[in-house]
Structures are given as C-alpha cells and as structure tokens.
Picture 1: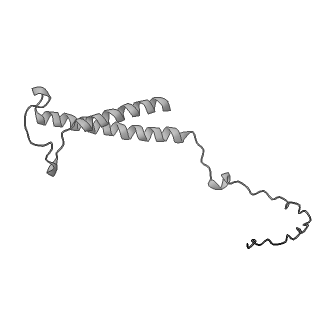
Picture 2 (picture 1 turned 180 degrees about the horizontal axis):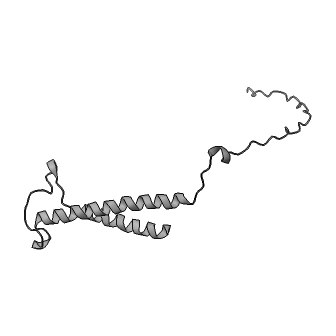
Picture 3 (picture 1 turned 120 degrees about the vertical axis):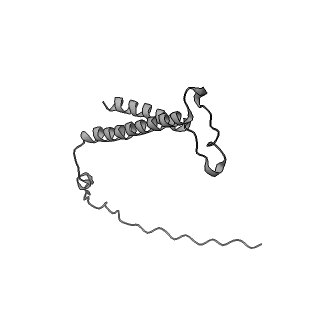
Length: 117
C-alpha cells in the first residue's frame, strides 16, 4: 500500500513541477513573460483559456499532492505504537572498578644536556 502511494506521489509531483514550469511568467520588472497576446499553443486555445486550464490543473495537482502526503503520513504512522523516550533510554550498568595493579615507581633517569663543543 505504501509503495503504491509513494509511486503515485512521485508521479503527481513530477506532473505538478511540469505544469508549473509550463505556465507563463508574469515577469514583473524582469522584462520576461507577460505581454505579447496571441493564441498560445498554436491557436488551439486563447491565452486566457490556456491560463485557466493551467491554473485549474495546478490546483488539482496541488490538492492531490497534499492529500497523498497526508495519506502517506497516516499509513506510515498507523503501524507504530506510541512509545516514550524514557522507555528507550539505555539503563546505566554498574560495574566494579577495574583492579588496580600495585604501582612500581619508575627508576629515575639521569638528565641529559646538550654537549657544548
């Protein structure tokens, strides 16, 4: 079930990205998009009809995207039982201190000095 939801989610995501990229930019001060008039899509539909179609398609795909996201979250969370972070904390293990070997002092070493020539 989760695999099917994920595959459909990826397909809807790719379609949503494609539809958003196809839409005409309003451009603003950038000097791109906007203006121009004309038939859009080779005269098949007018500019306004194309914009309405793309806007509706974007809204539908965005709704599907959000619905699938919620469905995936519900499906993945349904199989888990609630747990407390305190239940999963490791318990400290009390152990005896390591045995201490009797210390034997090291023999002193005569200091060495550089030889002056």
